[in-house]
Length: 108
Image (cartoon, rainbow, N blue to C red; front, side, top):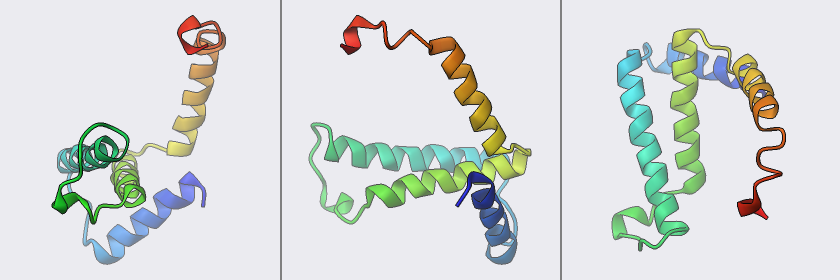
């Protein structure tokens, strides 16, 4: 599935099952919440925190998908073509950081 297809699939789902998009500010708050849930799993899986019983049923892939879902909603609502935006972002990073990381002694 391409990013464009994912944006279309989210839009179709919202219009079919979701009645309408939540407003942009609500979705931004939801995105923040979802990133927090992802951070909790990351901290417990790869960091020093231990799992609580309430965290044991959480799934890393599902939490990542939740973040992606809300980001796709926000892109649809604000008219952002994420394929185009991502391609431009890669070009920007490549031009800006072409030798930055390769020459970073901390990464060697």
